[in-house]
Length: 427
Image (cartoon, rainbow, N blue to C red; front, side, top):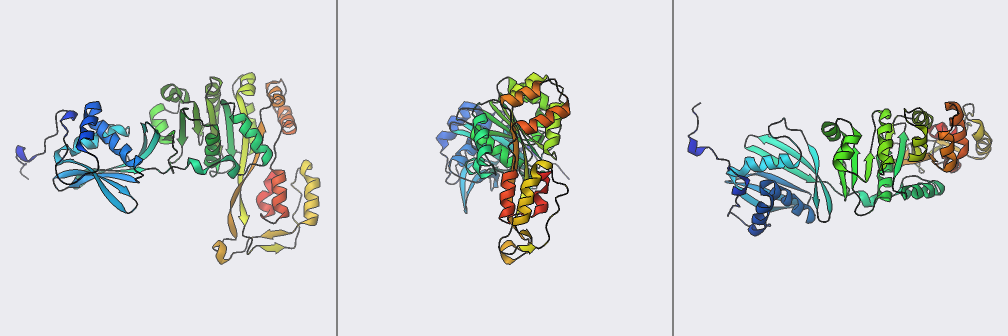
């Protein structure tokens, strides 16, 4: 195929400051504002300010795409599409490259399917999710402005008993130390960690979150997904802290529990660290902590709290069916046996059935049941002592365990759960 004449090939501007606004059509952002942004930081500054403008107007996203002889920036708000700005088509590639730079993607590298990045404004941090496309008509960018979830999560909404809530809030007010949240499965940990983060956060603090997958924007936090953190910092939490200088660091899931040692040192330096580990029961979480290659004194006085949660399904009260047989208490631990024998003698037990109200599942939601040990002076003395691992574990469970047993017993009495779902709390 013969090549196109040179004068038909769009020329890229030699310098970002050559960028100019199109004269075609009405745009929401005035030309004077764009000229000011160009002076302040060129094409990259313009792209960033377009996104911040859209976020401030409550828009859900921005799309950069060709429209006739222009490259257009279109803001999306509910059912309306608003043209924010237009530039001559020859500026499409420099604008595309500027978006790549904003999102931390190297120009010329393989394009990720999507990537999350953040922009700071005078009012806080905005989280965005960008998709980069190279279509038949050339490069396009679609940026989604992630919705804010932080106001919807609080500690008293995730399953804490009143005593557990009081002690957790008291420890979070210290503003430093390491809080560890374990769970036997992959679900629920993020919600609890975000509730703790919300309680510990104060305006002016720099909060960094490392999440498995972004679902929502949390106003005022800088959010990274784990892939981004691994690419940028090779899984080295000390490097991340040196680069981003967090006052609060939240990690949804720590793949290597040995890395808790690095997090202890960050917390010792004054950072509030909230960390989740998955597929751990409470005993394994405590054993992991007590066998870390770290000075027991540092562990005792930097740890603030160890929490274990298990999500249980709540029976649909419309269609649950009674079970005449009594559950076996053969696997129940001695400290729970007396109370459970009284519950078994007095309560009715149920199994799921299924009805239109619950969609045929037999259940009507889930609830987190929580056990925790705060690092009180008594717990600190046990952890820093010279006892064996088994001696320490036994003494910790007797010293200051905030058990879920009371909540579970009440749910059994009220027929809210099956015995099989809550049996692990009584072993």
